[in-house]
Length: 261
Image 1 (cartoon, rainbow, N blue to C red):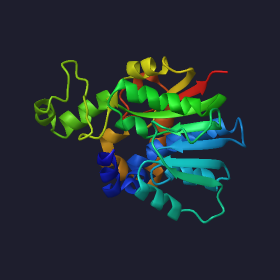
Image 2 (spheres, rainbow, N blue to C red):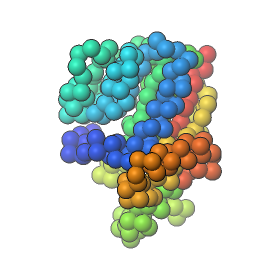
Image 3 (spheres, rainbow, N blue to C red):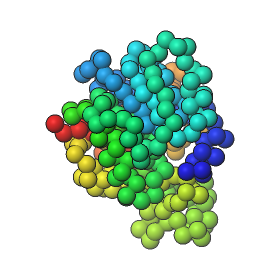
């Protein structure tokens, strides 16, 4: 996991999440988190892959009981620096593949909003999902984020001009599925693969959301919008983000699962 630690120790995650184009994913995810928290105001929440705490710190400051776990110690240092000591939050360094420090059925809401970006085989994906489901209470929810394949093909290979490079590395299949490895950092997925992964766990899907839709195709435009026009873009996005014809073309997706009773 050293490649991940090296990357995130030098990557400005805060800037990505606070730029206009990054805020769309955050706003969308928080909208659905709050919708599900309305069902149980005293929810115990865990975020696996909490990074610098964009979600965990916000939820803790809203009064929720939060546990934050991340692989990268420098991320957790930044997370802790945002706390004033009044929040009900516990912070641990840990790995999404091994959550053995937590008992079965401990949390009402489990957030897995980053780790699936960095697993390169079905075994690890299944293990991460299995661990997230195990620690979630029956009837509780698991939010899982993914990077989608088709948007990566369009944006990275064609828009960014990396087609020849990626082909030369053998990182795209004949049917245009991105392959990845630790050196490339990020792992892409298709909607049917997410469905197959869910079939290995004791869960029922409630929604599959286009977290940022087509936003990342238009980063310069989105980042340059006035507040009024950016709010209009977000409103447009939120009206269409549950449409399944949009999900496969979103850069990120959010899979909302319920642990079966």
